[in-house]
Length: 91
Image (cartoon, rainbow, N blue to C red; front, side):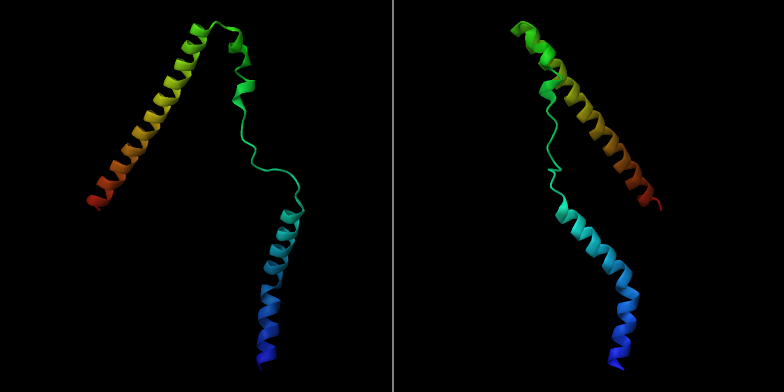
């Protein structure tokens, strides 16, 4: 009885197990570095020819753009949070 039940369970689980074994084999065969990061310095080399004052202006503009973008994302997330909170409150 035990062998019959074990064979039945093995036949049911055979396709997912073989798929996972194949995925593990493929992932182990990968030789590439998957997370290298982005070197944005290559894109901003153009500003390296500017005088130092203008480089500081460009750096300040980029920093302020990142800061404002972050604040806008935080504001939209907080709006979403408060709308969900109000919706659950009056549910």
